[in-house]
Length: 403
Image 1 (cartoon, rainbow, N blue to C red):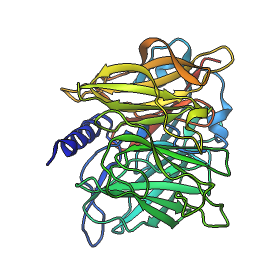
Image 2: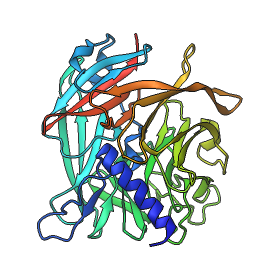
Image 3: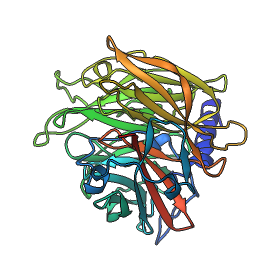
């Protein structure tokens, strides 16, 4: 195994132990895809798509809940934020990791049929607490046996597509674009790690961390990549130009780090990524929306912070008129693989660049030290934190600015 493969697998193992997300081994079986145990991509971070209405429950409450109602999960350490919603489900199979166009969290898991996936869409009830309702759909994605299913199902803000991915042990893989319960198209992508969709609802761009551009099975270089939407819903929707001079080819936006990490976009379209460095540290970079929008070229991100260890979840809340933006990040200890406190880095966007404000401070602390707190943002600039109660109850807590 070469050094690149070792670094990639080491990062995935660290995240597997840290966040317990849905990187699953798709096994060869007559009746089940099976599972290779818990794993993860950086996919818990970021909205991952266009989002939706927010759901009646997700947007209905503006009051802070009693901290005692979620004290068994975590404590909010930042006085500017509180929990405004708390929802449960005892039937969800996957780990929710993105926000969907239906107005709720989305999870992906291996389906019973070999090569298929299950997409779970969760919808919050009216009010600040209650049970999530779940809609499930199995899709025959023809994912090869003995490959790793990515942790994210990403609703893109164009063509009505949802992205899922898989990676083989040699780092080759694909992204698969779903149109509801059918496969619209698929492209080779090596080492797809985490992604987000940005755009205006008609066209846009898929931005992701991985080791090759879309439709390139040969490259294995760690970078932040982008692929623009080409065509229209009615006429040859795709992520490659295919001779269309009005549409750019997939590109490496920024090449840095030795191992891919999580990705997030705020409600304004600013994009953030964390990559592991050869030194053992990890670096967070930010990209102003105008620099990574559809049709733009390569650009260097602004360095926001460096921390030791590996990367867990990442999420971003856009700046307001009087408030700095907040980039939330949970680092993972590089030696013990224990998850550490979630930290928050304030930022602003000035003159077309993301600018760090101060240094990272503690944002959330898990009730049990070392516990991962997977999270992602919704379409209202709030962070949904995923937790567990007992062995079969998934809890989602909504963290927002104090009203």
